[in-house]
Amino acid sequence: MVSPSPSSSTPASAVPAPTLPAMMMFQLYRAWSAGNPIFIRLCEGRFNITRREWRILAIASMHPALTGTALAEAVSLDTARCSRAVSSLCEKGLLKRTRDTKDTRVVHVSVTELGMQRYKEVMPIVASLNEEIFQDLSAAEMTALSSMLDRISSRAALVLESNVVQERARRNR
Image 1 (cartoon, rainbow, N blue to C red):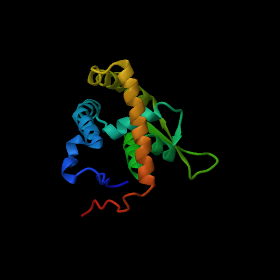
Image 2: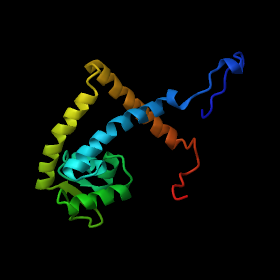
Image 3: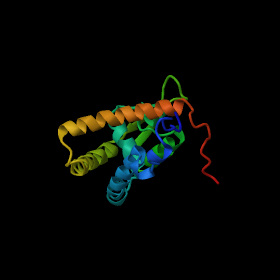
Image 4: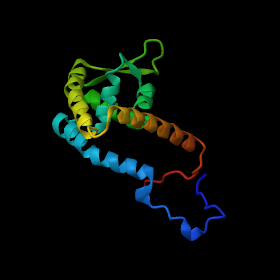
């Protein structure tokens, strides 16, 4: 349902018009926007990696090796953006690429020793900042929020897949 219409028994004037600030997606965006600069400063200012690179490094550190496609999926990026960030991390010596011995079309990405060292430097700070940002929520609220965000993400993926909005973004206008 793209644009709900008021019930025929309710006068149109009694139904408040939707506003952007009242919409949950906007509220989620505002919360993300409030915390995001903290992590930009940390990653880019202190550790010379972008947030995107940090995300890739953090996920890659959880696995012995991942294909480029699997890594892109795990960090919720398209393969081209992920590949560019992986290239940057390889140039910085934090990740390495190796060809699959059985299928040379497949490339595996893994964390270098320097990359693991950087991960171990950054992760405790990220965890501490997350704790500070979410300190006003109880453990039960954090669990509930995590569950709700998972459900929102799943529903958004279904809505996207259903092609309810058929137009494609044209960013080079």
